[in-house]
Amino acid sequence: MTEAKMMSLDDIFHEIGGLNRFQLLIILCVYGLKIPSAWSMIQITFTGLVPPFLCNPNTNLSVETSSSNESFNSLSNMMKKKSNLNVCFLNGTSCQDFTFLGDVRTIISEWNLVCDMKWTKATITTIQMAGVLLGAMLAGQFGDYFGRKKTTYSFFLAHLLFNCVTYFSLNWQMFGALRFCIGATIGANLVMTVPYCSEYLPLRWRTLIPIIPMWPIGTAIFAGVAFLLPDWRYLHLANAALSAPFLLGYFCVPESVRWLATKGRMSEAFSVIEKIAALNRKPVPAYTMDVIEAVAAAEEKSRKAGHKYNYLDLFRGKTMVITTLVLGLHWIVLSLVFYGLSFGASSFTGNVYLNIFIIGIIDIPGNITVIYWSNRFGRKKSTIGFLLIGSLASFGCLATILAAEEVNKGSILRGLSLAAKLGIAGSWVSVQTWVGELYPTVTRSLGYGFVNTASRVGGMLAPFAINLDDWIVFSFSLMGCITLVTGLLLTLIPETLNQTLRDSANTADASMQARPNVVINQIFTFSNKVPLDNGHTQKSAANECPQDSSKFYFNQNNNLDLKDNNSGDYSDIKQKFSNTRL
Image (cartoon, rainbow, N blue to C red; front, top):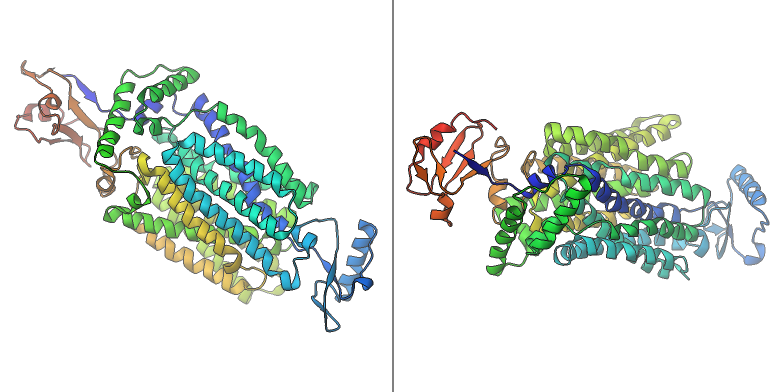
């Protein structure tokens, strides 16, 4: 007997190279966009830095500084006296003018955003994160409507342009508005980059994308450039210059095959697969067009039923409702803690540039270990485990504040804060793969859009909820509690280890309700006029009953399980395959 295995797009990508030249190209061109995006996001840490300043109650009494040496000498003298340094009132008189010391040029020193204007720093950060939220919402919908490629590169082009325009900001209000726009482009790229790349990778390599440390690299590059070029205006131009080469990727990478197939553009999808196979020096599988047509047909059936996908589809079915809500809460918590610690880098003891660099690259050890833990123990245990590391480290910081000796407190706090950041980063990397596997192709961008939108709510709250300067006890207490509670709630979401990516939403909820020990179902159908052992010929079940064909499934014990919806007797075939293993 001959049998034809029902293949998937995952199988095609595996046969035309798996992780090969094309996949490395798309990772560099698409996932690499996170490098300038990370720079833009973390830049507010430096841009909002408050340099040491002197209070001048009367402009005629201003401290004159003609050189950087004099500034630092003045700073040294003021530090010894502990007077008139970073104070808002002098001799009962409110300061009307300030002298900022050192060579650092931030928006704080440019527009005197201290004392009664101190609130603007957190406000601008929240405005930026509100832009990230809007970008995440728009990109999820645009990505499924206009395609992954056009959406990704359109927003990234806008990112470059807004960075250039920000250089010409006239006041903090204009700067805040432009940071909102930059935030929107960051949010869009955060939503699009992971699913865009993942849709070109087979099952084995799907966890690779989130662990590639593009975000830490972008943060580390920013810290180095800020040290050499401590001027917020020039840093925006430098970011635009870094972004420009990445735009060339638009001419190198194709549209998502999965998206093309679900939109019925089958010839284009097949053409893309041919180009991938050629670049990887692999043959195109003979069944490729059949798989593409099957994906397109399933989606066409859904469209004819009058269904258009939107964010409401993420809440259809009990399992999907629980999954979407818990994931949304998880991403809020991740963002709140991640950016709360990142934006608070200037609060740690030591050099601010070194702190920004370390708090960025500390993600890399977590990223590297995620691929092992995620594949060894599953997405679920990996995500929860890293989150609990963040929770324990946060409680450790709280204990240090309350009990440690003052002489060691600063170093211990910095070390435990970095451990908390590592745990949060590891959980965030792990859950990105998990999210991509929980949602089907037709709503995958919407799923990423929703959780990224939720995370931006956490980002907006971070500047006010996590204040390591003024509310340090409350901040670490909050971080420890919310990460612990979220870890417990994540146990309600199903595992997706070793499951193929789903392209249609029709079986989404059913497949997620399968028992965890059912790793993967291999489906077999009859080919037309299959010869049986007894010499007779059995017509294709699919030809006789196209709407209700017989299929064979392997159960959790890896034994063949016949699902017979027809009246035919296939006991001899079942007996033939009864000992077949996966």
